[in-house]
Image 1: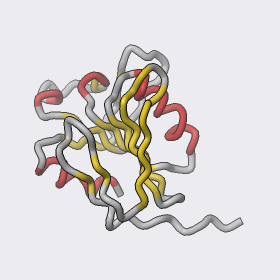
Image 2 (image 1 turned 120 degrees about the horizontal axis):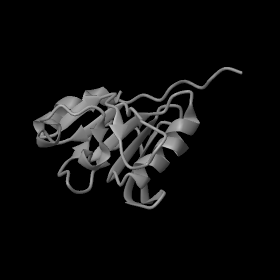
Image 3 (image 1 turned 90 degrees about the vertical axis):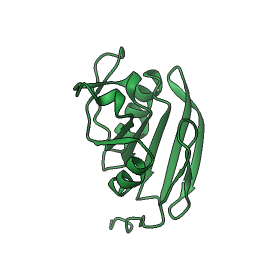
Image 4 (image 1 turned 30 degrees about the vertical axis):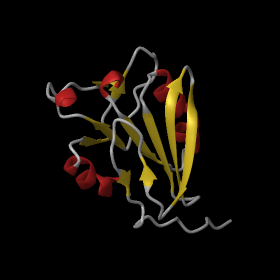
Length: 141
């Protein structure tokens, strides 16, 4: 789902890395977001895991382990001061853009329905197209 954004991101001068391990001063966890967005300069040394202070945005597509994406990763990304965390929730047909990290939380959360462009804040100067996103069908009991 979010991999379709890679051409848009690279066309706008950004690097989009799939499943890149991240580290920060926050111990005990080394998340691998579905997509990590950064600059070519910040990955020029091919550092792995990538320090969180080099990351501009992380993207997660919600899986069956909702707690990891909604709580654990969001907490770690905020405490690691990653400016933007985009949560794509195909079971709900929405995307949530978390911004303005402060301590263990993001101060701002904007919700977008699938099909609406996601307006990214600084340092990005474009919107992400979600028109091709499809919500998952409801789970059967």
